[in-house]
Amino acid sequence: MKKVIITGVTGQDGSHMVDYLLANTDYYIFGGARRLSVSNHSNISHIKSDRFKLIDLDSTDPENINSAISSIKPDYFINFAANSFVGTSWELPVNHIQTNTMSVLYQLEAIRKFAPNCRYYNAGSSEEFGDVVSVPQDENHPLRPRSPYGASKASARHIVKVWRDSYKIFAIQGWLFNHEGTRRGREFVTRKITSGIASIHWALKNGESFKPIELGNLDSKRDWSDAEDFVDGVWKMVNNQEPKDYVLSSNETHTVREFVELAFAAAGIEGQWLGSKGTTEEVFLEKESKKMLVKINPVFFRPAEVDILLGDSTLARRELGWKPKTSFPDLVKKMVNNDIALHNK
Image 1 (spheres, rainbow, N blue to C red):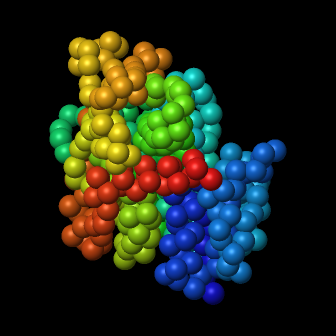
Image 2: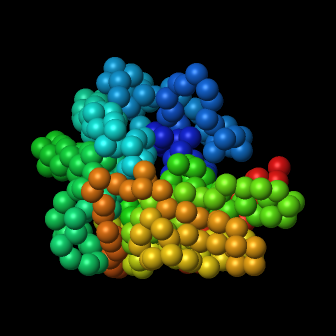
């Protein structure tokens, strides 16, 4: 039976990949997670399969990586472990390089030594494109990161290419544009919005007070998809005949403002914007009561903003037969409904 190591298995992408492989293969899956003093296993608590085993795996520890790969000798290694919150990367730049770049070097070296036939996938990001020179962005767009996070992923991409070219390892790094879902961390803006709306929904229902959601740049444009659609694309990518990097995207772009409006509508809360658009004076109020639902906090503005990300996944759709299934409005509705249900438990 073939064996797969998936890192970052307690996160959004890693946990969805486990579900996908359990449903679509008969492979044995080793889920790598860092040992923490506080458990964060909620995303995998539902998994009961005897084909899944949780292992201690710290991607910043080369000895730990060597031990795991030399003993398991995986057929696939899918790396979703990362410090993936762009906003904190200015505060923790060294950590991002260690976690997102050096870990890739450690993994590829271990594969070269102990499992040279292993197929390797590293999660890339649209943040590598950064200060974009053309819209939309496809596989030929230059790497122009505008954050330490984006730089760490761009660096990892070069390492993947060098090890692929030098040692003929099947190693790829896809460009995954923004992808969200019900398992997204609450520190990310989309989940911050939907979980905040869930709190407001129940507060309004019960006649209680609530705090408004605080956001930064409402006019940032992003290409959002469902994370569950993306793991299918990753699996198709890593099983391609030749190692080749692809963009995965919805091929649509929407502002944070649009996400806010759709999310409140999905919760049945009617609001309106007041104040000068695009300034810190702008607020979103509940239409009838005039209670503040959203306000702007300058703390959440980035030192260097990526204004627009819009992917062109034509190549993946044509060559891999992949395409997203969930629309942007359906994704927003799905996340809001999930958080409203969770908040009431």
